[in-house]
Length: 216
Image (cartoon, rainbow, N blue to C red; front, side, top):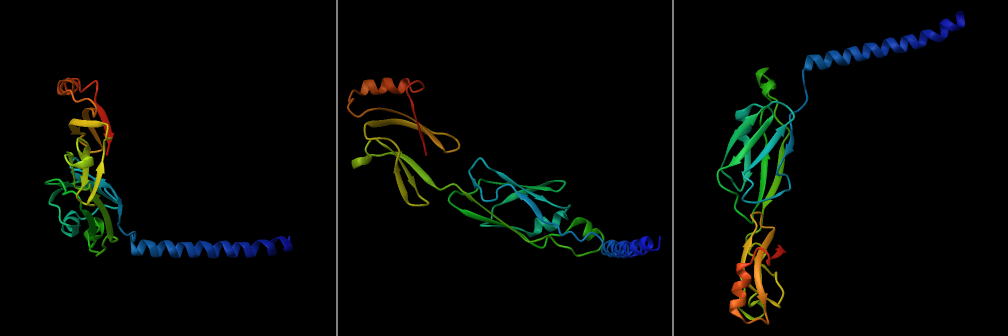
């Protein structure tokens, strides 16, 4: 019995010491309150390439935020005019006009305040956030008229100053139309060897069944 008690007592002392230590730590946490720093959990346009059809992005926060402090401290470079709307921890920024093409943008948020911290009289600000996105390159699409471009569909990238011939030499493009997302182009054409314009007109009239599709 004496040996058993001697073996148990040190374990009891260790257990009691751990319980006291945990109690002290819990007490310190309670006294300090919630010390979790607010941050941006999600930015829907992060590292994305957007187009004219994309008119709003969303910031989702880890904690409820003081609305005015977020709206006053959100910066977009170059500037993009827009309107704010909120749903809980989600903030939506809707552009007044589409973002100009061929531009890189940076979104920054610093100094915005935690809603609950401010209500408790504490000055707790959000973890600094920096995000980025870009718009599609500025391009023009046309039917070439000179040298090797003649009769071919040409895509000229104004942002990168690069030119691409999209159709082969054995086709003469008669008409074309790009898809809304800019990723594909529908065009009608006739063979280079076929000089019959009436045949070409007939080809165009049946564009739905005899059309071509090319990816940009």
